[in-house]
Image 1 (cartoon, rainbow, N blue to C red):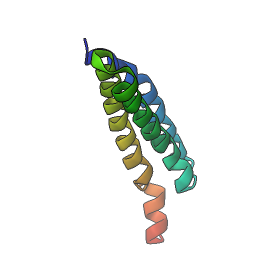
Image 2 (cartoon, helix red, strand yellow; image 1 turned 60 degrees about the vertical axis):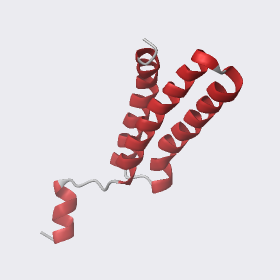
Image 3 (cartoon, rainbow, N blue to C red; image 1 turned 120 degrees about the vertical axis):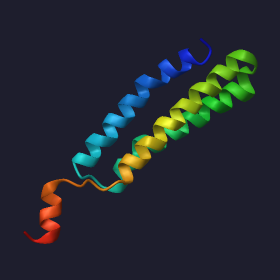
Length: 98
C-alpha cells in the first residue's frame, strides 16, 4: 500500500500532463509551450521530494518521495513526447513534395 497509493495519486496529474503535451504537440505550438507541462511537473516533483525529505521525514516523508519519483517518470515521458516530431502522412508527403 505504501507504493500503490502514491502511484495511484500520481496517475491523475501524470495523465493530465501527458494529454496536455500530446494536445500541444498536435496543435504544433512552440517548443517552449510543449515543454511547459513536463517542466512544471519536474518542479512539483522536486518540491514534493524536498518536503518529504526535509520537512516531514519518516515513513510519511518516504511516501512523498515515492510520489515524486512517479511524477518524475510521467514528466520524462511527457518530455519525450514534446520533443518527438509528429510523423503523420501529410508531413511525410510535404517533405517529399508528392
